[in-house]
Length: 136
Image (cartoon, rainbow, N blue to C red; front, side):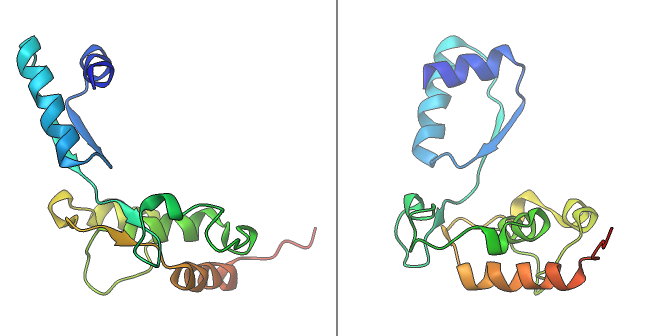
């Protein structure tokens, strides 16, 4: 905890968001207070759980031994991950600029999100169908 606080302070971090638990934020706040340093604006992004609701550790290459190659397209993965824990109506497919324009920190949910391989594979299919094939 101390190392994170000192590192953030030394780097001049003013806004910190990540997959920290609220417990970690509370401990870090105590360290900031003890050192009499300004507390950065902290926000919490929900953890990502496996499809079975198990902890985020289950969302790895070990999860059901599914190959990563069929959906390893950066745009599909980024599009999928941005929607985990973030609400923006019914829109599921975003361009990078749409993600930037629509993102709103208060719209991040408080509950853990479930990693759904079928949904990711569906998004990947969309991006594969949209891809241009270069025959050179």
